[in-house]
Length: 487
Ligand code: BES
Ligand code: ZN
Ligand code: ZN
Image 1 (cartoon, rainbow, N blue to C red):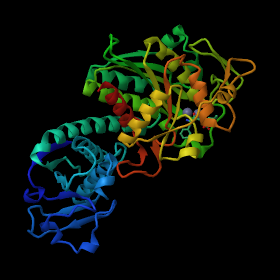
Image 2: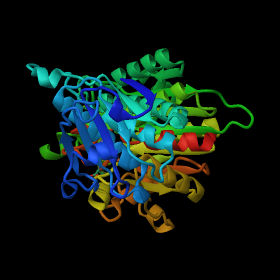
Image 3: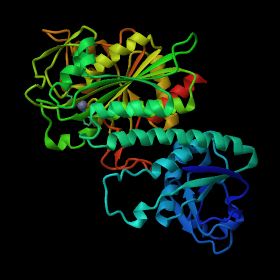
Image 4: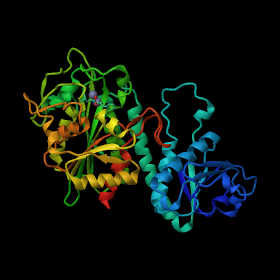
């Protein structure tokens, strides 16, 4: 999109639509209050009002967005306002609205501009690649927005808006990958996307195909992928390189391009969204794109284990014992608990970079949906300092995480009688035992597991800047964390 910044009063700039964010406790300019009966619009969060000022101010239409009390505002308040703004522009078919927030809040200017732009761009996101017969109204696209602010804030508005654009592009990229059907977004295609990403951004990309996985002993990825005609891949994306004083961070994603459950097959109504089982991988892709565009002064390695979990005559079976890349053996008791098996190899591989942190994302368990719903990502960690940083990034980015314990008792629940580990620990604490399983493959490296099964894909949009389907969760969270540690 085209995001511009201009100083001066939005009320004096001609436009087809001027969007004005309003705080409950900050009086509006007289030209606007004279258009209102004060009881009709208080500025409380979620209250919006479209006005036709009839020449009282320069814009032809004025859209007031209630943002609540200025002292209680968060970046998220601006993000939601951005989404409301673009959706109104879309409805009215205004390609280039103007926007401003009246009065200051507790949120710094750059942060507020970033969040507003994120909301504006993501609120306009549609995945209509496979739709035909769209109406003109549906085909209409908002081209951009001009943000108005005081002259002394122009620099902060500009830098914040630029950051918002990078983030929104990363999220949209992740959403596109997840929304693509499973027959399109196969492991090979996901690897192609990584190669394209490398060509676009300069990231160094390496892909291992089935022959290379076999040669190197990626037993987990191979076992899960063996029931599918679409062969597995392992994808490495690297930004920067290991240098003295520059931390290395490994991001690991679950890239299960379709999860039928395998021979422990899922019921139909649990399978229909399982093209989204590569949302962890998509979050890594979107983050790597943002990291490259921002050229963060870090060494960031994105690792994706990718396979398709299908039943078939060559499929792995309950009862099989797999030798993972680490050498540890895994007894398979349920082929639907496949994510942890492919991730075991990816996490073990991460150790070779001697990272300061390994952060892994996966749509790993249905149990996390029962625990937290769509409103937080489940977090499990072996290092509290790292977990605290991710929690903080969650608050700032609006992609909240909620930590679950990883006591020793949970690690006991996945010990096998005939192998080193078993791949299920029973229904109780299902999300935590899955996290405990993963932790067995990271050695002593600081490790955070993010279970995004509840936050990655939405049957109904949970937030105004979400759309139905993929949310792109993880991109804003991880990019915020990486920016914070590079300051
Ligand atoms: N991909 C699923 C988890 C999932 C469920 C993601 C719902 C998104 C929405 C995962 O591979 C899985 O099937 N997990 C099982 C594990 C069980 C067999 C121990 C689950 O959660 O039921
Ligand atoms: Zn599964
Ligand atoms: Zn899965």
